[in-house]
Image (cartoon, rainbow, N blue to C red):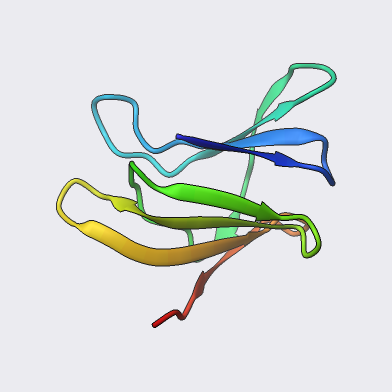
Length: 95
């Protein structure tokens, strides 16, 4: 799992990497005032299920980045970017 504070929504986004039985790629948000959870609905080029990934938020562009990890078969070296405002994933073309 990874967790990042999203200033624009006042939530902590949790990208789940696994539950001990399988690899996951779901995204949840915890509102920091109400402590209520919600599932973040997204579209676009979603990251594949993975564990051992890294994440970061770029507040100036309101984006969440997911990097790398392990999908149970191979090490991943990809970057996916979520536009938090519209909920759309894209895959960055990095060398």
